[in-house]
Image (cartoon, rainbow, N blue to C red; front, side):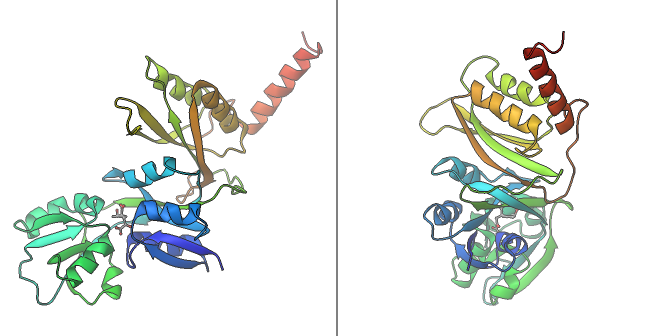
Length: 303
Ligand SMILES: O=C(O)C(=O)C[C@]1(C(=O)O)C=C[C@@H](O)C=C1
């Protein structure tokens, strides 16, 4: 039985994403994002499901940092969930609640709603949305901002549903595994890498140029500090395409040459199915034809 760790406890958005991604695999919750990575690295689980980016609050930094701190893991699939929250409370909690807790990404997505409906409630950070629900049950907080499914897991009173400051908020989640066989290219794929850029003029521009020259469309760029080396950063790139495609392989090789540290984080189908935009001359056939031409020139077959 394949075991998949997910960022829990039960009733997180990540559990929902894991259910979408894991098929019949056995899911089990872990308390933190680093613990989900560790479960795979140590062999306790074959896979892990974690959030990676939210359309309102941006990157999930615990996921980015865990991707570089430890043995390499690769993303083999992703899920994209629309995000709308419920607010739960204990029936014996003060009305209105004096404290409201959630994951920082969740609090950031309901700032306006909280200001309007619970302006006096102190906002507290919990390990996850469902972790906040557990805290409400245990009397630690009065209310929690949670995924709607949390109401099915925890015996709490529903104070509000369909809570979201922005109608189209989404979070993207990854299914991670130890490196092995990669998913096949589909034409609508995403490749992720993390690169340490040298601290000198134009080094990031140089990396970006390698992608741009090969007609590769970036879908995300985040910087994270290299811990313990003030002023130095690693850059996380997501871009359209799959390492099996020549333009992507060619760009990765160029980044490898330019940087002392590149970590491949996966090539997998995009959850939204958006096909890669192909610039003129960037297709697989264009690369094959150009390689054949160089080979012919080398052999003296062409002037
Ligand atoms: O706490 C959860 O339920 C999570 O799955 C984490 C998380 C996140 O990291 O962004 C996932 C989706 C929502 O955007 C809020 C929180």
